[in-house]
Image (cartoon, rainbow, N blue to C red; front, top):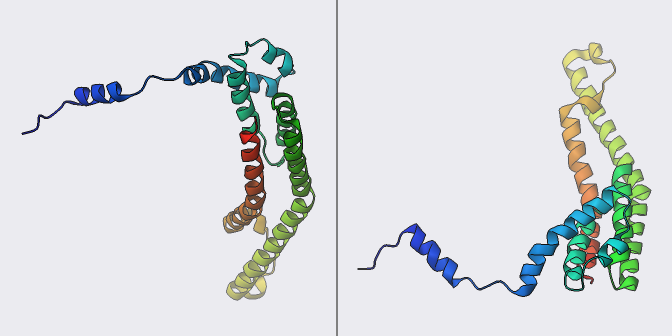
Length: 196
């Protein structure tokens, strides 16, 4: 009959089976958080990334830079408001400073700028048209329902924008419109992450 092992014995066996971490893994664990802190500092303050990165030795710099670039890429988002636009621009400027393949970076950032411009112009028009069409549709249905129930008494102004059903449908349709832009944005961000 097999011996029944305690949880402690099982954990000890699993721990013994783990391989020793590589030097690269150790350096990533050590310097990755520094890159993240530096990225957050860069996004919120006026710091010179090039000068700060040059303070790291040749061994640490690639790990700090990789982590820093990852945070910058994650902070590029659709320009839904002025704060998001500014943060994205700052992150994009930072990527130009830390990525080695400047031509590829500039091509991807150019695609991002085109996407953001389209989102702010054509996308805004689309969102406005969908909103107004949805508002008119809900208003018509609500007015018809009120007239059926109240007759001529149901002929007073209706604020459909405050109706929970309208708000829920608007969020759903807005999500569909935004998902097209988000898909393109994620593709470009993935390409940026792959660049050295």
